[in-house]
Length: 115
Image 1: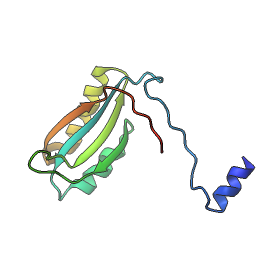
Image 2: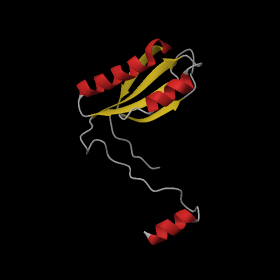
Image 3: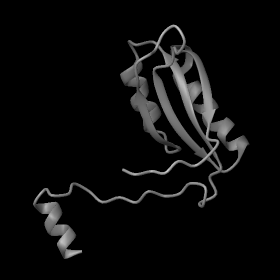
Image 4: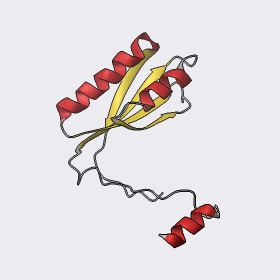
């Protein structure tokens, strides 16, 4: 630990963090929710969605029209499909009329996390 602390103090490393395997923790219903949000509200609403305790990460991404209208991405992790639906409904309620459309892209396999 002393060596790691010294490396952190010297700005060799910034932080150390754990990367949990959600599946092994029982979170089997993981979905990337994608939302079509008015660009005038994306920063404010994105910060609110990202602050929800069940959202692991939230991003503003460019649209790729005409085929991809979504610009807000928020990952949710749930133990049951019912819990996932409740979480997604909570995000929808928070976004209200600023959300013009959304989809949920559920995980079909585990990808190796490297960073």
